[in-house]
Image (cartoon, rainbow, N blue to C red; front, top):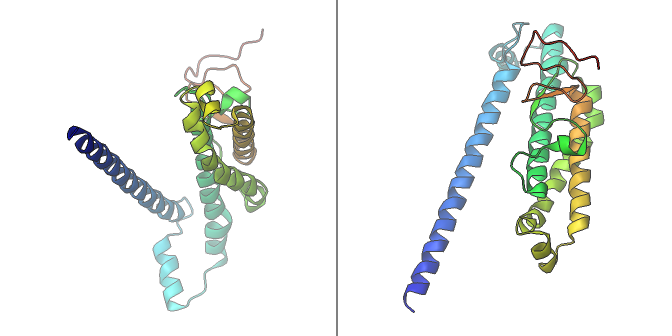
Length: 216
């Protein structure tokens, strides 16, 4: 009888430790993304550094036309597009893994592109970003709302239904969220090549540069 409170206290302590570790990990990742973003803005072939820009800003000196174009018309839209596309693909992959209870699942299952891969941001611009960003942001806001239902689904569809989860409606919402996020990401970043070396519409294996597309 005495062991039960002790076991309960131990479980609560373990849960608290995991929560603390998760928060520390999230903060560390946010800090890493922030540092990488700053480095991205200050790095490029044009030779415009953030040090020079900050120096001019502090002294009140106006930026040159070249500096404004490089920073605000080239690097910044590329950075924001990369962040949104990466977040959309990552969240979409997590939703698919929870929905199908398969750690290898990705948005390719619903036919909208590979969930883990690299897209081309060469054509990123404010016009493209302004068209796709609202869709990706809405999907990123909606995805966490599915977390509780996806956790229940991990117990099985029958158990999830007994917990009061509308399983079919949740599946429809999850697939719609993934399709919207990934579709917008693909539209703004171009074709996405998955980690297996193939893109969604090509038969060539990019891991083998000597391989030619099949014709039959």
